[in-house]
Structure formats: structure tokens, C-alpha cells
Length: 389
Image (cartoon, rainbow, N blue to C red; front, side):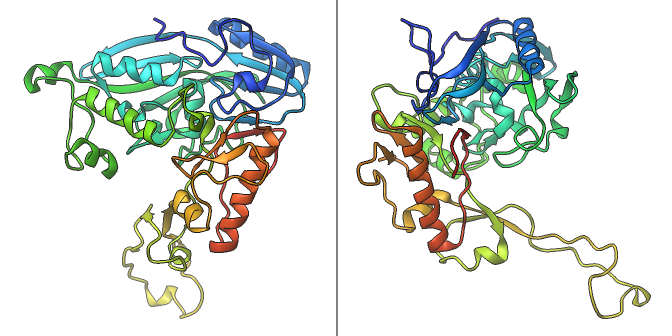
């Protein structure tokens, strides 16, 4: 069953440039632009493009792509497949979602059905097939929490196979799909909680336990509480809109690729060099377990053979680093049509007619300021086509 036919393309004419196909509205014309609306058509089209040996790019909702204004010398395949199949199992529901299904429409559908697990991921633009690449996450949930497997067509081997989530090396805004494994995500398999049984007792469909302080505060509850699914979705959409992180044709701050930089992950020791007020979140336990070392195995120098070195890691706030490097909301370089969002410093926006290079220039300036001030190199989150930072 299709969830939605929503897309980014205009209704009066077929799109032909990246500026028409992406949410940040920059980019030139691909040499060849193809579209596939069924699973079989998608697989066949991609296989033909790969066989040609030419450069290629897969494009879903275009919400995480920033392209140069020069022609892309290759083929772009638009993934427009739709459909969701459902299997019920006890208190769980298994969804097989076509790659081209708009992500937020999928979330809205699951909330309406009383299926919990991705409600905090409301409002994230783009297609479902792109979700595992970035391991999308927000407000205490990540795709990794619900992803079971992907249906994948491998570029190197040509094989089509089911890859379990455990083999995708999912991490903070990253995966094996982003670093090394090239190919096509045909479909995504998710496992969610079916709240129907408990709803008859509790009086309604409830979310998973809340895991993000800002969301819990906005809902007026505590971390770990469960609240109505619809309330979570509505609150997340409101929070995202306040940050300019919802697609809205009437909001110039929404003409962006969402968060342009990921939150840096650094060692605990490095994080201690930053100002005390810098937000930081531990990612692993800094305390190593005590270990009894036999005297025959230790001579007082060097590492202990067989010992596991654990480097405590800390996640920093990219927004805090940007703001405290002297870059405020609404900042732009002289004469540029690219600007830092007036609502959130993590988003770079196209204020009207900006080129891809103008976006890249602003991104490089932000990177340089943060590196000069704090020694941290911010990493871009969107896919850059024909552009470099």
C-alpha cells in the first residue's frame, strides 16, 4: 500500500536540474536524468546505468544533497518507488518499505496506525531508502533502533541480497553504506511496536520511552515516560519548525539541506581542552574494569599483551562551537546569497538564487572559524556533488 505520493518536484513540469530536485535549491543539470516508479523498474534501470560504466548518482527526496551549478557529467536515477507491506507478530509489526517512500509520510502513517518506534523521527525530509545511509536520528531515536535489514543491490558484485542491520556498522550519522559499500537500497525492513493490545488497557497508543530531555520538557513529562504517539509527533514537528528544520515553501530558513554539520565526536581528553560551558555527551564508559595481571605477564613497561585499549569518546555540540566561534544566526559572507539559518546555526540556507559554490564557501568559512577557535574540524552531513570543502 502506498503511504504518500509526495515529492519535491513541481507539478506543472518535469524537473531537470538539481536546483529543482533538492531542498536547498542549488545545482545544474545532469547529463541524463532517469526515474523509476516500481521496484522492478528501479533495479533494471540501475543495473543498466551501472553496466554503461558512466558516473551515476541515486537521488531520493533531495533533502541531503548540495550540488554544483555545473553540469553533472553522468546519470541521475530518481528513486520514486512507493509501497509498504505489513506483517504482524505478537506485539510487533514488520514493515517492508520501498526506498522511494517519503520518510515523514511513513512516520505519519505508523503513528496513525498505533505503531511506535520512529515517532520522534517525525519531520525528517527525504526518502526511506536514504535513511540507513545516514542512520537518521533525532530527539532520542535513531533508525538503528528499529531497522531490521535492507534489501540491497551491490554495485561491486551485482548481487541482490538482504543485509541485516547488524552488518551495516550503524553509528552516529554514519553507516557502511556511507563509507565503502556502494549500491542501491531497494527496500528497508523495520520492526515497530504494535500498541493495539496495550491501548485497550492504557486508553491509547503510547510512544516508546522518551530519551531526549528537550522533547520530554516540551511535553511536560520526565525522561523515560511514555506519552500518546500523536503528541510526540505533534511536538517534534513544532520543535523542528521552530528551528527551520521542516520543509515549508513560505519559510526561507527551510530552503536548506537540514543540519549541514554533524556533531563532532572527540576523545574525552580533548574535550577537556574546551571551555567548561561547552556541551558534551559521553558515548562510552570512561572507566575501564579493573584487571588482575599476573606478574609473569607484566614487566612494568609498555602495554599489557592482550589488553583492550578503550578511548573514552564524547560528542560535542556543533551548534555551540559555531556560535562561540563568532558566527551568529543569519550570518552571511558579503555579497553572498547563502546564509546561516536565522533559527539554527547548524543549517545553511539558500536565501534566493544562491549557487552551490556560495553554500560551499559559507560552509568552508564556518569550518575555518571553528577550527581556528577550538581545533575541531566540522564534517558536512549532506552529500556534496561537484563541490568540495
